[in-house]
Image 1 (cartoon, one colour):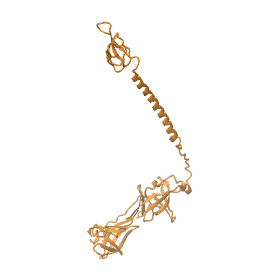
Image 2: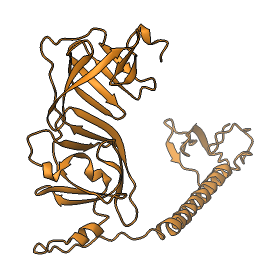
Image 3: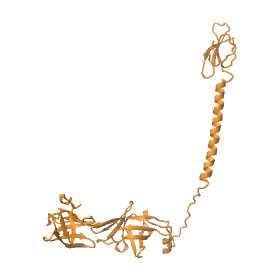
Image 4: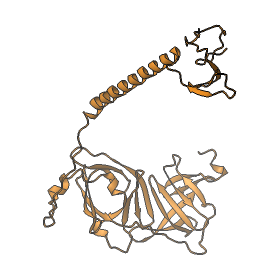
Length: 327
């Protein structure tokens, strides 16, 4: 026979299941064992159509009871551990965070800030606020070529003056009391400057740069940078031998002559762009823009097959096969 409680097969003579210690009732017959703890029993009363009964065991198996107790203890332990952990984290981290206080400002529309107040307000702006293009306040509104200074978000500083471009860099070197910037341009702006930013979007911004070394001041205003271009004539007179790239041996400076009549003069960070044409066998003329259109005659002389003397300086050919022994 089968035990109606645990479903194990036992001897017909057993009155107590040796597996689950369940007392066997001989007056009923086990019909089906179900995993949910119920058994179907059929009465032995001699009735032709036997009655089916649903009987739920009165208690769990010993193993099931042990598992239940272990689960309860585990849940209680995890809950206690979580509570104490959260309290510890809160105590060690949250309690030491300084509370945030909203800065209260008082509007005084009838009072303009003094120059001293503007200088001392070192926390109201940063080097990111100067990103963009500026020109000298004295050049503001000019229609002719003036120097424009541009600062980019990736640390590049650039000056555009007519058809002359100087490219360098800048970085923030501010202290606790003063806002300072280091500008590396071979042109006017080179060195450490204290900078003071004032104004607003409606009335315009004003950037004051004060040199730390010479104490020379520059006042800049927002402007759209403009570059000037010098177009060569349709049929310029050129010397084919000059067309190419000519640089000093250390490549610090040089000339680039194009066959369309344009040229570039490279000196360190500065590139001058314009047009060129040959005036004679020993002189060529360049045109470029600074404060105005400039025409300049420059002497030249070929020293060898791959070198040329321009204004007394020797330049090497870095544009073709003849430069292999000079690089």
